[in-house]
Image (cartoon, rainbow, N blue to C red; front, side):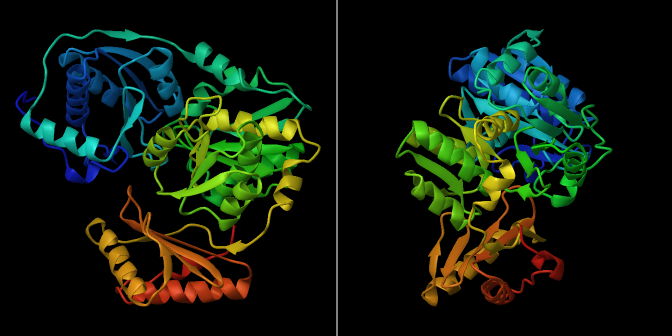
Length: 467
């Protein structure tokens, strides 16, 4: 291994994290260089201590070991919390007052992917930070030293912190699907201490994800949970992604509640104790959410998609709650402001347990626009941002009403449509929402025309159904 410098495959240095295919674009040598470079940055800020955890992927232990080797060779001490969900690593940075954190995780990507989510101090390490890390490694601009590694089990402290915010009410029957992801490590320590009845599916951590892919935003990944909720007569079901920072939920009738619908319920709850507060949601969220936040006395703010971006914006303006369509939800009212799906699940149980209404009643009480799910379609990394810029330029020329905070979100008398480039994959993302089916069809026609002018066609299956 060369100590002089390290070049990364440029495709792995993403907006929010470093991620790629193990053995293809990501190797142990990359993990070592990431550790060494982050360790160097920590040292230069006067820090000496980094917390590290890893998810249940088959490649995670090897990458963790290499990363620790890199951190200690930069003279940084490492607390290794072992196999954990991402939020447990975030918690450890606060709990241990560490100077930074690294989570080895492929998040919700297929089993052959893995990557690194990082913190500098208590803040997200993303965007320009990641590019700086790449450039420093490329020059071999590293500190040297002899840091120590210690292993520490923080599960009991983590579970106790989550349980601290539980507000017992009526006893609920709840199904939980950890999807063989890393939440399997912590789920029992939490649900076994809750009132009511709890059924856990796919609890065993297994990086091959034998039951279904751990991405709760895809309806077919929730089929097993829906079946369990119906079979056992549960009040609700909660699902997690592979590393536990994104939540999915279904009501007692087995219907999915999407991130923006859940955020309406959490917003109403948070605004009771924080009247007039600003609540942030990403550009993919339904207009219903922004309207309902305002109706509940809050100030809705539309912001860019991306967990690191939203976390930073929240901290900057002191918002008590923020969330994304994708199920990244951030509570900063009585919690740390990072995305912890297990904590979000407990906050949802609080609402249902202390209400006369069921979750199904709450869902039925929301305005029901018709909208497409998130439409994702392939577009090369070197082309996707260009397509969005071309579409925006033509729309502005035509005098369209739009927000360009993240891609383009176009408002018409029928509703709105969105087009943005994914920051993590070679895809374009679109979404449409209208008051009725006819309006939705007109928005789809507009969207298809806007894409066609840039030589991009929306695949037929992308225009399927509503949520």
